[in-house]
Amino acid sequence: MYYFHLFLFLGVQNLLSEKVDQMMEWSSRRSVIRMNGDKFRRFVKAPPRNYSVIVMFTALQPQRQCSVCRQANEEYQVLANSWRYSSAFSNKLFFTVVDYDEGADVFQQLNMNSAPTFMHFPAKGKPKRADTFDLQRIGFASEQLAKWIADRTDVQIRVFRPPNYSGTIALALLVSLVGGLLYLRRNNLEFIYNKTGWAMAALCVVFAMTSGQMWNHIRGPPYAHKNPQNGQVSYIHGSSQAQFVAESHIILLLIKQVCLCLLAVICLVGLGLVVFFFSFLLSIFRSKYHGYPYSFLIK
Image 1 (cartoon, rainbow, N blue to C red):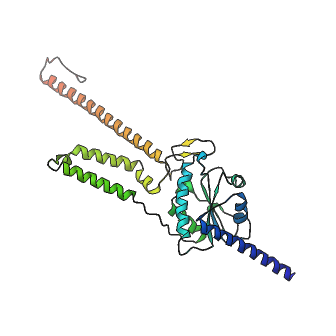
Image 2 (image 1 turned 60 degrees about the vertical axis):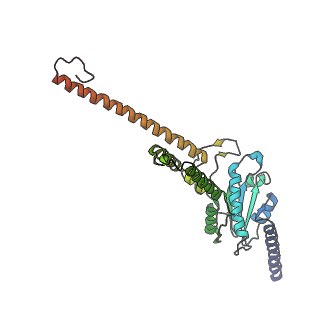
Image 3 (image 1 turned 135 degrees about the vertical axis):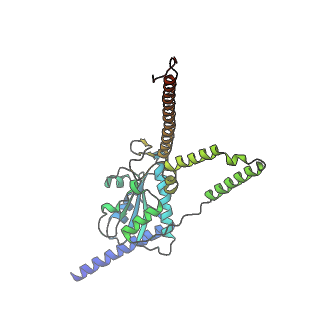
């Protein structure tokens, strides 16, 4: 019996070593390991396993028309690369992806009907409710995913993003444009003191900020969401903790309309006040000049 348990233990250790070596080999080729149904069941679901696995369930094929899947995949790649090329990289955590067109049976097995979805499969035990990332409430930014992974695995990942010079180039072009305009109008700079222009610019900034454009810039949400199951496009996010870019545009237009209606109401109220006080003025005039034939509203 002793030798039986010994052989069993050695067999489990050999199987575990083979699985870890295989995962490390795949991880050395690419930061995110692509998996089909068979690989998922063998390396993620089946024991023995002493490593944690982060799985992104997605639908990246063009015919699925899932724009949010592509955007989430970009953030996921940034996070996986940050882990793969960090000094803390080890065989305790792996990043994988299961595409619907390559592992539809996995989606059916997990009763999953939406994408993208992020799940953590711990080294021991079954995934709990907290092992499913709350994408609708938190968003899919790499920093948010890293924080969630740290809570579930105690693995700290410092996110390194590739340099993006588009903002710097845009700022340089804007400064050049403004500088060139000021140079061409250097003999007539009265437009700088135009109160109407500054008021319109301030209104544009207020409309942009109140509609959530800054949140869009920070979180990078998709323009809209198309359900891969029924093809329905959603322009308004169902959660109070997130929004789509299209939603911001709709809110901006609504705020503008509210302001225009408010101005119209103010004009009407102002017209009403003019009529009232003019009528009151006529009534006083009539009271002082008896026989004056004209009146309006107030006798």
